[in-house]
Length: 485
Image (cartoon, rainbow, N blue to C red):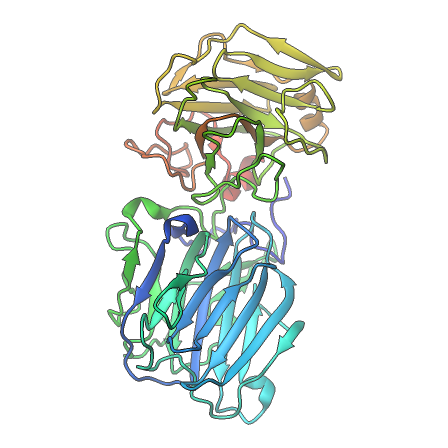
């Protein structure tokens, strides 16, 4: 499978330096990090670096802010999915730049470095933005700070939170612009103007931009410099730069630590796959909120496969009092088709395999026509809190389903029919779900909102699941895709 492109980092397959953890942030929960005080530092020269992966689009997502008065120095994605940079002084002077580039790829990790040095006599050298290792040169608006401007970075000025990630505070004291997605290896260096190559490099084999070990950079002794690697789930705001500039957490718990990172990118639910009755997935692209919505909503993953053995699991959050477990799980090739109705419908649908939890029905397409098998056991009487595993075997063109780690009766080694034939021909099989009046959680291994008590991994040590994948089956992540996909 072609999972990697140079422009967007869909997960390094290098065996070199690895980023082990990220932090999941959810706007609906007002999850963000903040620091309430800054000491006076170098307001003219500084560098900010962040890796991020978006899971929700088309609303304001703040990647950082420094200082709050009527203005702030900040970086954010707006409701058109373009990147804004505001550089302000302690008064009301604002220098704003906005990219032409759109940041809409929810299957990819982005790396952004903002390099500021207002002491430079050459205007173009006072502010530089790098996206995935390449300097940004295409702007809708581009206002360069004046020489020797004292920015709001590294200053004691600010009426409320002095520094924030995932949100910003306006002068009235309210919060806005929450970020939804994952962030990793976030660094700010007071007093140094670093190029992007200090934080990342192009992989020799794939040409993609990947992270470097940044623990050895010169962070100085400023209380404003920091490095957040999210490696300690018990202290996710820990500053590992050596400056002890620890961050406070708002509505963030140990369970928000993730293993979906720019060096091992995991499948999530695709927020661009939308329909009339669709509620965009939240919680890092893993949670479907459809309780009380008496319409079908179809969901698709961000990764596809054409060979190998793959596993994901789902968690039953709720069971409709009227319709039971009206949830379908499996795979689909889609082939450019989009449907917001039930994916098992016989009209204008192709090449799917879906297990209907309530009654145990199994749907496929065979020789261009929909087929239906009613032999597998249903879960209609099951209580909330069960885990359903999906094990796809494209080597033998079969699929098996599990409940709480045990095979569902008559739901093992079911034929894939057309989906298997099309995968053999190179068409991607993509995780697919259809939900009606139920809340539901999917876990591809990188993060899940479901409570995991046993923390099982696949045989390569990747993913975090409640139940171990069957022998020889692997989580949908780029490290595994490089080896088996």
